[in-house]
Length: 454
Image (cartoon, rainbow, N blue to C red; front, side, top):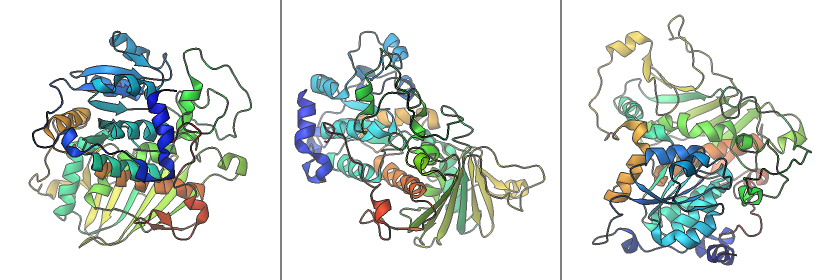
């Protein structure tokens, strides 16, 4: 057992947050402290798949270590960086390489985000973590708090938050372009209509036990999740559809599609959430996310902004087309409608792409307000670089955890509602609990497998 593994087990973080070791701010970048090197020294946990895309976006920096449980999945990365040390177990990577590491990218499946990301935070490393920030609300809350206390720079991987269009939406709402907004409808064609897990089967746990690929360490892939035999239905792609590993269509796409309304309307914590789904077989309901769902959130008034009802649809379900739409205008595969007293705004996924006031006559009449929110260089294409800039300059990145954490919590509340469907769940955000459902409260904080506590 490595030193990091021993330390993780000894601290027993999941028994209470008090065990976190926080590195003082002056160690990490306070006044008079040396900034990260000119070419920041980055380690990556999850070097294949989305991790490879993050690496390409930061290729001007220096990569000093990689960790991935599957050599085949990470083959493109390893081919491009043949001399960079590589590990299957990220804990061993940190144990041996931590003196060379200034920052960490975490791009693993959802269920292992937290154990990798919190280890990086405890070691005082700047952190970029893919969306959704974590697999559970408890993990999100604790990681957000720890990252803030540690004084590191951090960014969640919802690229659209760096786009100009999401900033334009915020400016339009502040300008009163459609008046006060009381209602929001959002939708995604996933899990039915989008890669990488199209046509996800509605099924119970597979009974077959095929051999684990020679390139993979299955035990490490499971990480803190309960043990189960390997099956190709779990990885490398369909893990998003299984409760133990992913967060479903809402967890996958919600941090993109809900992001614009969450920011522009300053939504914060909802007061209630309720879901209706296509699930009906108990054995399936205990394993996988539904083929389609509708999730209803209610948010209280915020300052001079009125209360908001927000509805999420997935599995190719969509809201009704507003009466103000011109003949022939349709709702796309992923997007949102913000419905105000004076009009409707629509947009697609990822940073409010395709942002329009409808009908088009109102869009043409609207006088654009001045840009008041700073733009990110190169928009979504510069999302990772914005994090690198934050590490070197000390000014927060666009989707830092203090924003991305609450956004992810909102998304994961809907995920829990799917598991306690057809029940209006009353949420006490300050105390991180549902006031009317012990069953729902069981899903706030996960149980970890032995050897994986922090």
